[in-house]
Length: 372
Ligand code: IPM
Ligand code: MG
Image (cartoon, rainbow, N blue to C red; front, top):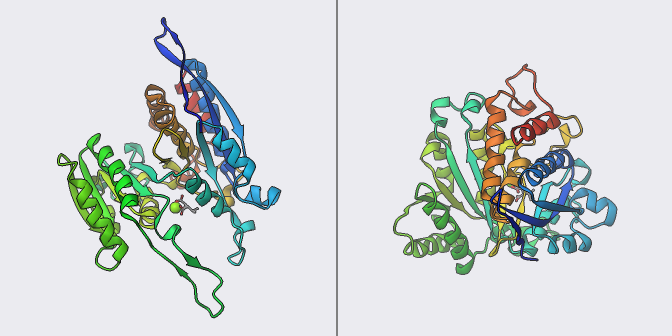
């Protein structure tokens, strides 16, 4: 990984740093290429307006990579990512590759890229845009002020424990393993995030049943000693699923292991009105990061202009913030998306039933127009 070239030159008149960055583009499968196209158009607009230079390097991942190379994350893609300052990834998977007996699957590409780059902290912000509160199935008053940051551990737990898939006698297992350092480093990320927000952290586990989750809770309590200004609550994961729906606005930062974080963040997408709204950032110990929507490849709507590009565009904004340190630009993109929603534009997934909706491309263009 190269460190980003933060300062290329300083334009005294415009008081802006001009940056050159190389970004790996992994569009993947299904709606991936369509939503990626809109995110890149938005980034091009940001580059033109603020005087940056973004070079895009395309590479294969997921089903399309299996079709072309037999490998869901081929060596060439790994090389492209290693030579980049950040990775933008859209989505992987589809019915063509979802045979449960197949030993090579698109999702393996995703897990390998996360592991290869040591991206242990997955940030998934969930906010309810006021104009969408009535679209969510929960009562609008429950959704007032919902603003949650999920911090999901991404390179450990049951996703990466020892497993046996082809047991000879109808038996298979996966192992949930966590080590103290693995829990510590992601807990620090979560506590620091809470310090910059409303200073509340909810740690999710299943300490009443699982040993790995008792280690999780003990470790979080120990790390907490460094963060006395934060309020810490522990919730069992089953209780957390319920509290997320009954008191969503009481959550600030939610810290969870790999699998529980996966499940809870999909549940929480209901609070935002659609899975198509949620971006994510996967970070390691430096500024390098992988940015991808929480949603999948939605093969059922691929190629029809129905995909919501918001999650992908907001993932690009997170990349501007965390990997390129362009906070002003990140805020400009986020605010442009909000304004387009305020104006009433809706993609198919967030349009009231029977109402007209705008296409993926039209939504992207509307965001770009706000950045002029
Ligand atoms: C996610 C996805 C992935 C995960 C799958 C596709 C491997 O659900 O990013 O949330 O479980 O991590
Ligand atoms: Mg998921």
